[in-house]
Amino acid sequence: MSRAMWAWARVAGSALVLGVLVWRLGTGPFLDGVRMIDASALAAGFGIAVLTTVCCAWRWKIVARGLGVDLSLPAAVAAYYRSLFLNLTLPRGDHRRRAPRRQPRS
View (spheres, helix red, strand yellow):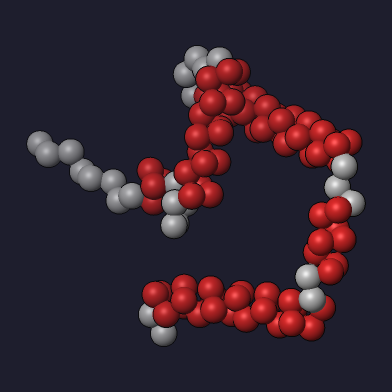
């Protein structure tokens, strides 16, 4: 089976599972869960997300320093958010890591 077929099969399988869950359980459990979310839960989630992002960017800063690159923490946070955006929105993740490297011409 080709890659394109597998990709479509995964999407179709996911849609099928979701459809069966909604058919068997209805939307009640999902809506009940959404109604239980309050401001403190949102604030906790936001705080955890920011802390996680800053810690990951700090790790990038340490690795960059080990490679001899001076990277400020705000620049590392911005670069980390960019990489998250690319990994979540592009079909196969970060295009720079996936793109074939061209050999320089001599």
